[in-house]
Image 1 (cartoon, rainbow, N blue to C red):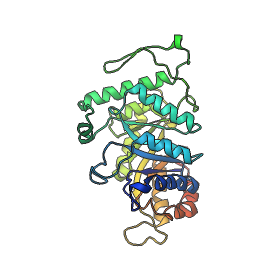
Image 2: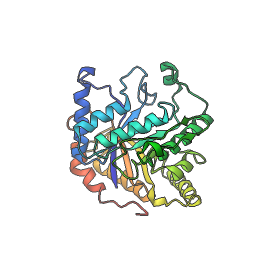
Image 3: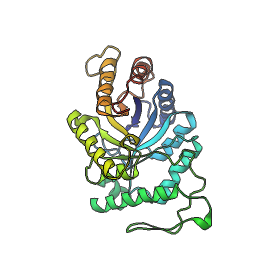
Image 4: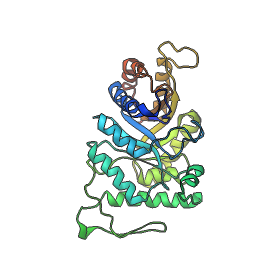
Length: 307
């Protein structure tokens, strides 16, 4: 099983003047500790589950590009980009650029968007949910079209959808990952989101806090969609998002290394391939030591069910 790390909060003790060096250290420490992937939220304002809207929030792809420059192997993605944030062709071009310049390490994380406050705040249209799902499906279709592009102008095909129209789905250079960077779709909606995962995606992301019964049910629904679409269920990377604070001895308000290892094991038994964690003490210099020494060596020995 693999471990990823998400950084959702950028308000740290050293302040904005040192945010760049702190963020660089976090990315490098995560890679050195053995984390497989590195994720940032793609939001304009801080979200309510983390803090007030006026707390620090970095633009997602600029942050990932910065992280790419100080790392060599760790995968990089947004958890996740709202479909409303960027025109689809520009989003695909952005992910492609990250993939090329990072040496083939990009994910494309995408979801239907939900934070109306930040949209209104910065003047970004926020259509009804039904339209956002339609936009997401068209965006996924455009991504596949652009990543199948031959690179020859005369062969670039148009795309005509209800919400988006492209005269030329031209994308040069193409991604280093083939056939394209993995597409991770966030959300747990059974009729639309999980169906799109099966039809267009390479990974899903669910909240670990939903509990084993609910997570098992969602994976069963995903498996049913895969069967209907003749998509091998094993091709989908199943990821779960978890929050934790670990201490060597499991002191109050923290988890011990073994408790975290057991959580990974329980998720693996359900069929999850990756657990992506948010560490509340991520900015502390020694936050990654217990992960490097105990947790990651143990979880890499765990084989997810169905693998």
